Length: 354
Ligand code: MRU
Image (cartoon, rainbow, N blue to C red; front, side, top):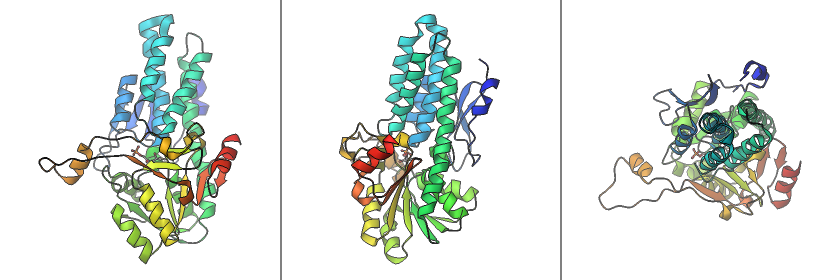
């Protein structure tokens, strides 16, 4: 494979975090289970390792798992070609279907898998270089979309003040820069963000561990609060905007995102705090009519017991990982193609068509 000829398309994360990277012919991931204590990387040599890393949240965040799956498809093709020669296609398709199933809620995963399947369908029997070029395009496009959204979103933050965010929609959750955190980074650069309130985001603590780490390393003032402190904060000292990412935006504008987003949006509307969702067009899903049609991942209750420090004998727990925020609670949906304010069936269709 001629890697040098594709150097022009090399994706560059402007933050330098590089949560997802392709290095020496392998997928190289920053292990998000260990942050902030340890900054360690996990190298995936085959598609099974990629599937495991997505399931176990070594890599997480809708766009980041889409980019990882694209590189995973390159590894799948390489292995199938080695094992099955010119009969590589059937096994490759099975591998990509397994990749698609690794996590159910984020639509970016299926979107990236479909792009890689389409590339494979066009390729001959030496598809590796074409697949790698497509994976790099997906990665570079994700960063470019985040850069465009950062500008559109920051234009909406017109006066200086605090903002609040939920989960981690930063460089760690994407190919680079971030969606919600891309907007926050750009608004901070323009002098419009004095402090970021960060929901800790129970039970996996994406806010307390990941968002706080990303903001601290850039010197952006941030304060972590419990998820349940957000409403009281809005009552006493309202932020200018709540700014979050999304795992999937349905055709009617409903937003599916990390559990706790819905209650943040309800509290925001009650207190007159504007609510911004930042998501690339790869997160918009025209095939899903509304949020209730989106499969909500139920994760192992053990994550909750770990956060609680133990499980009382005989106690049960449920751990839904995402929730649905009705479109009516969203003031602005920011995509790389423009802003839907508010989002709804017509504005989402217009964005998808543009
Ligand atoms: O379970 P996670 O950590 O993968 O959930 C991530 C989120 O909910 C993010 O807000 C979403 O994927 C948008 S990331 C740009």
